[in-house]
Structures are given as structure tokens and as C-alpha cells.
Image (tube, rainbow, N blue to C red; front, top):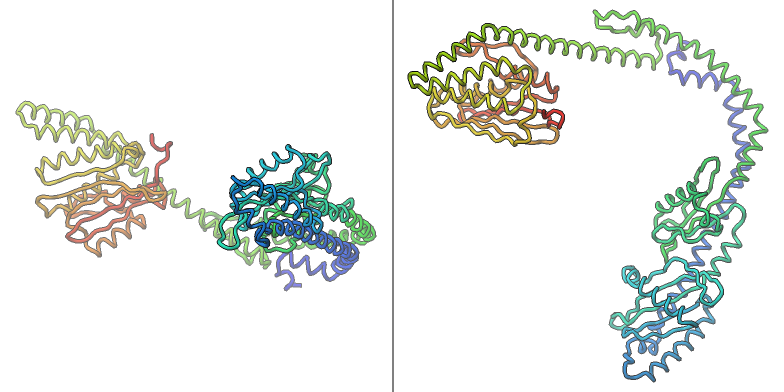
Length: 608
């Protein structure tokens, strides 16, 4: 019993039920109920397969006979001559050849009585007609030739079979298949004319009528998957009534492949179930679909199931009782798990001991998943707590910077006034820039627009250019569409300051700093480039590692001053935009440094 309880819940229920009579009795009942139905299904499928194949074969025979008529110019030199002759100045010969054509068609139609009308049109536009009894019929045929000639030329065999047409020109309604074929000379393969023929569909309809019954229905779709024939007219007369069935059959015919002989499938429409088979006629590319509503099979199923209803009821009742007892036993472990969850102590990480909750496999997986989830949540809370501490720390620092800021502003204004009084424009510029720098640092927190950050860099470089005239060249290439995006304050100036303080410390002139941006998928890359002394390889590796790890501990530079540094900038970027953002440093000693700031592409809501 101990080994069974170690299995999954589903396996335990299955084994206990299998030890009784439920499974054998259910299997025997289903087998007996389906035996008679399967026999009828096989008979239906065989009958449907035969009808569909015979319909396609008869259609092929009918259409191949029409193609043989169109091949007369290839078989008879007399007919070929008429197709390449210009009768413009010899109407007597034209009349004689027309009589010859009609006589030949009459003899041909004795072997193929499905031919209704036929017209040959030679390369010069002269026609030879058979069995056209009215001008209306003649005009209709010429309209059909004009309408379908281009489709025949596009066909691989230069032959086009049009959808079924209703013809009432003779006073009797007939269903016909129009065919148009482009004719070519058998000697030089040049085009010599067009053959148009109309075939009576009556022979095919006889097969469909003889095979049809109250359940079987046959559809014919054209090469564009449009339904144009139904052995039961009600489907075409009231399509809205059978919309679901017609749409399902249309979806089925679109999946047919040309090399499939007879495809079979089943459909369930509401409470009805249909057996379907279909094939593609190789000559016309029409889809012939036959389906049957299995009401009779359903009745057999119901009769068999009613015989075994009592047995099924007893088996199900027994199964429910067993399931209730077994689930009660198995739920004991779940209750233990709930007790463990309610008594978790968050101080020790909130981990559940698997041994205290049973040995079921699914339960063990659930406990492991819960422990992993709890561990991730704890780690996430710790990270969020650390981020909040960092933000609070920055806020306190900003408050400390604000102490006596009015005194600093007044002092800078006094220096500016003295510079104007003594005509020293450099000191005036430095005073203005320093005042703006201080005001920006105090008033913008924690985010600012990119345009304001770039203006802050210009103020800083203005002071440096006064300190070191003509030493620095600054280039900024940022598209205007990104200037309004929100970014954490002071993430660009520290990087420019590092370039000047460290990258250009040993350079006297030709110091170049560039800021540009590039789009890469979902990220926006701001590149801060300088041509300074670069960073040693071992130092560069440590900087990138610290930036990736989020090490924000303050360091002292060579002058003994605290530096915000690359690591602080990287941490603030990740805190604001997420872990997939940050910065990467590339450098080569003696060549320069590239700092890649990776930010998400701003949306319209962010650009405010």
C-alpha cells in the first residue's frame, strides 16, 4: 500500500478501478455497442467511395470525348486545311467546307450523343458551326468564347471547362458543360483556331440520381472552390439554412490535394455528424464531394447504449464511490501541505519541508515549485528594497546639496557682477554656467528630459573650454524625435566628465567627444565616444563586470574625490528601466573609449 501511495493520484485511481469490474465491463459494453455500427459505417464508406469514383470517371469520359472532337484538326488533313485557310475571297469554298463540318459532326455525334453544339473558329475568324438553331444561341456562344478564351490560354493544356450552365434556348431546360480549347497545328505548333463545345450533363445526373437516397448528397465545386451543383437542390436554394454545413464542406475541399484519389473525413455540425469523401477530377480540377448524415448509425448507437445503460450506471456509481474514498485518503496530504503553508515563517525564507507533507510525486513537484516561487519572490523583494534604499539615499544627498543653495546663487551672482564690472567675459560665462549647473542638479530629480541633459553637458563643456581653450571638440548627433524622452537625471554628464578628467588628462589638444544614438530592435543605444587614452584591459573587464553586477559602492579616484562613476550610472539605469538595460564600456589603450548606454525605445506616453 505504501508503494501505491507514492504514485500519482491519477495512477492510484486507475489501478484501484482496474482491479474491479469497471474497466472490463465498460470495454465489453462499448465493443458490443460499436460492433454493429462499425459494419454499417464500413458499408457506407465503401458505397460512397464507389459513387464518388464512378462520378469522377464518368465525368472524365464525357470530357475526354469532347477533347477528341477538338482534336479533329490534328487527325484530319481536311479539317486542318479549313483551320488555316483565309476564305476572304472564296466564299464558295467556305460554304462547302461548312457543309463538310456539319456532316462530320453528325457522324461524330452518333458515337458521342452528349455533344449539344460545337463551333470551330479558324485563325482568320471564320467559324464552322454544328447544331446552332437560333441567333440568340449563336450570340450566347460568342459571348462565352470572348469571356473564357483568356482562361483557356492560361491553362496548361490550353483547355478550360466552364461551370455548369442552364440552357433554355431550345425551349427545354438543359444542364450543359461548356468547353473551350485553343488549337495548334500538329506540324509547326502554331495556333490555328479555337474549338467551343457544349456537352449535356444528363449522363452524369443519371449516376447521381441513381446513387442518391435520403441521406446521400453530392456536391460539385469548380476549380475556384465555388459550389455550382448539388444533387439535393435545397442546399443551393436555401444556403442560409445550411450555412455551417456548407462552410465546413468548403473548408474541407480547399484542403484536397490533386494526387489524392478519394479523401475521407468526418464533420460534426451541432447534433449532426456527417461522413464525407471527395476527390478532384483530373480533367476539370472540380472537387466532387459526397456526404451522408449518419442518423441510422446514431440510432444503432442509441439502441446498443440503452441495452447497456444499467451496467454503465452501476459501474459509474461504483467508480464514484471508489473515487470519493480514494480522494479522501489522498487529500490528507494536501491538508498537510495547506497547514505547512499557513505556518510558514518568512524570516527563514519560507521553505516547506517535503518530508512533512507525504511522498506523492505530484505533491512533491508542487512543493518544489512553491519553494522556488517563494525564493524568487523573496529575492525580488530584497532587490526592490535595495532599490528603494538607493533612491532614499540619493534623495538625502540631494537634500544635503540644497543646504545654503541661496547663498551659492548669491555668491555666483556677485562674481558675475564683478566680471561684468571689470570686463572679464570668461568669469561671467563660468558664473552663469555654474549657476545653471547647480540649479539643474537641485531642481531635476529623479528624471529629466534628454534635451535638458544635453544642455547640461554644453554648460559643463563651456566651463572646460574656458579652462583649456581650443582643447575640446564636441559633437552631438541625436534625432529630434528622442529629445523629449524621460531619462534618469545625470547619466550623461558623468560620462563626459570621466572622458575629460581621465581620458584627456595627458592630452593637450585634438580632444574629441561625440554623443550619438542608434536603434536596435526594442532598444535605443546612446554612444558616448572619446579619443582619449583609453582603459587598460584588466581595468576594463572589472568595470564591465561591476556595471553588470550592480556594484554601486563608492570609490576614490586618483585625486581623492568621490566619483558617481560608471557603476552608479549603470545601477540607476537598471533601477529605472529594468534589468535588460544598462551600459557597456569598450576601450582600447591609446585609441579611445566607447560607452554604450542601453535604454528601451520610448513610446509616445514616455515622451512628455
